[in-house]
Length: 256
Image 1 (cartoon, helix red, strand yellow):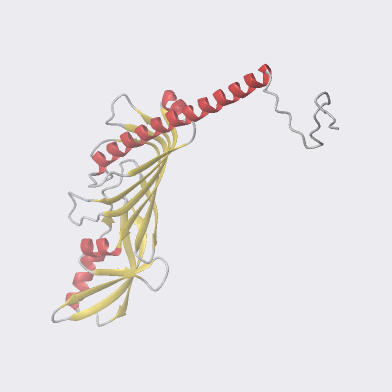
Image 2 (cartoon, rainbow, N blue to C red; image 1 turned 60 degrees about the horizontal axis):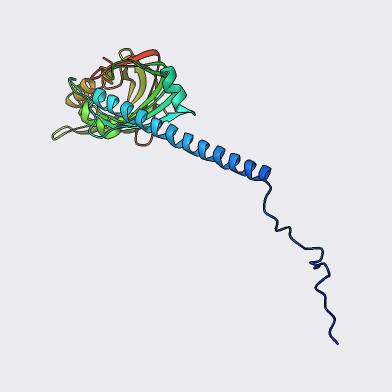
């Protein structure tokens, strides 16, 4: 009464799956691909370790040179870094440092933030020296720092490229003048085209403002070899832009 189907081929329909194990050639391809991925991942990891070490050494060297409390942040660009290190030159390095003091100046002007981009950074056999083919940097100085250096209250002016300077004396009152800022020799910021804005410019106040604005104020805490090209005013301070070619960085060296 019952019909047996043991001798018939099983039927799985059109959606059947080939469950047969991979052939030897397929296993070889899989193993080779996995090995390649492992090598790539391992190579990237090793390269990143080398980059971190290079960044740490560069940060320490610049911290020693600029006298910052906190170590600058450094990022080495390009891949692979190991090849760059083997060649003795890093393609591009970005550095950002904060609160760089200005010692040894009659009117010290600290740099609030310094950003530096270096191409072709070469390290010598000594960790005390580094050389870059070209450098572009921006030093930001806050109005608070400028005010402390000049002895008058400095703020953003009503016109682009100008600042307001306010002098105060107990008996003479307050007076505000406007001045244009520009780059001057010796990596200095100059104040020119001074105009009275508000208040009466009495002799004591004029003398105070003349003393503050007549002479350019130097930026003595940027790496030696950089030259000031331009300055611009912002809401919070002044951006001073520098460039340099074939620049050598030494510890405790700064532009005069």
